[in-house]
Length: 178
Image (cartoon, rainbow, N blue to C red; front, side, top):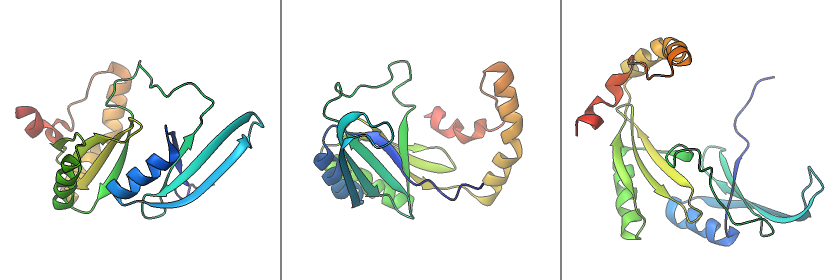
């Protein structure tokens, strides 16, 4: 078996219509599909839901479930707030900066532009509280090669020590100097 691509990634939302409109207006995603049932097909549990699907480009689908009979949405309080997020790639740093300005003009709080050297990112939240990242690639082939050469060594060192290996510390040195 070989995985071909991600079919969809699904998250919970507070309001399906608000979510569709927000992603369409702010990130230009098309609304491609809605599925709703009074029972869950896989478990047969009586739990009505609306399942919406948004086109995230290149065959990537971002989906959401509105489940009105469940307790209000929360988050994993044992995981730092910055860890769980959805990252989307944009075409250029200029597009990233223009999107940041457009989001801020709408009153959406944006963190960044953060320089990861191999890409630059901005971070913000959707109306459900999900953390989103937009990233623009800036890596050179040499940077990609250097990172590829050390990935297994870094993983082994981390696995043994649970301390950040310094093989690729050059990635964030400029960001931390600011």
